[in-house]
Image 1: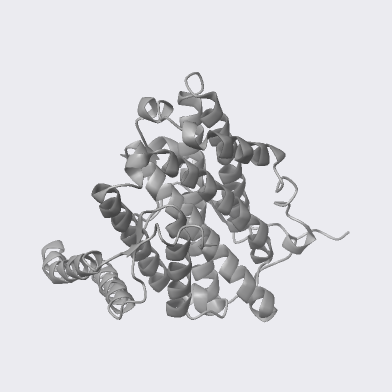
Image 2: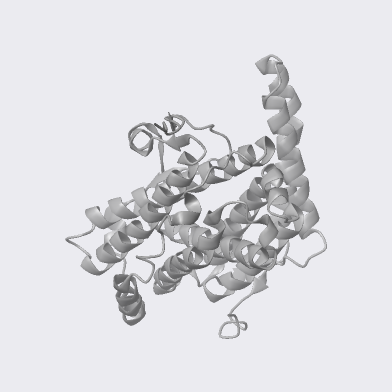
Length: 353
């Protein structure tokens, strides 16, 4: 009699390492969100709602026979980097699910159109998070998402901040996934796990969600007209791009494993996202300014040094003194980038694809 080899036990994580780059869970002013006047974009929103109802990706996220393999041949360095990528991506998608689901539930009676739209976006985010968590299980680890739901701290963002931040999050997500997919399509020798083949359809969900938030943003004149809108646009663009630069730098082992140069990949994603944002924001950043990427990459280097200090066995007070000048340097470089003259987008609108 042949005895089947026992499958290794999957360790279910209830805690995740918290740092500056860990995706947050969010809440908002649901009453204010329900009362948004979206009449100027209602026709476009209803058209996108119909597209969401069709659920073109409902049969896409299927774990076919390619997943039914052993992944013991992946070296430890790549495995560790990939699990880190999966974990943070899963938390990010699950964060979106929780926010969208709660918005849908809380505004159902006051704004049925937006409620259904957020419910369908929550469906997509849950699908992504679940698929990523199952991928982690292939490496004998998964996240206890129910535990995280109950025990993580939720950060409050007003509706306007949610719209700015989620729009950029979805659009930068699109470019992250599609650029990696195109690279791996040309270089299949780096496709060490079948999840990468799902990224083309996956990123279309991100793109659709971004288009919905674009319509929400454009429905609120105060969010794209006037000096305040320009200041907020630059703030959120820089925040998202800085976070991405730090994340990519921190995960350089993962990008090396899939054959990408982390620095060049980050620059491509930032440039593409910045150009796309011209369809929504009144101003975008000048990513071609000679100071832009060098200063952003300095911030990433300083952040890695802070991480190394945090991992040391030195007393907390010594760590604080060592980190302080690095934190000041990050703030100073980001401030210099924020003060660079932005690019007005109204003349560009209609020419950006």
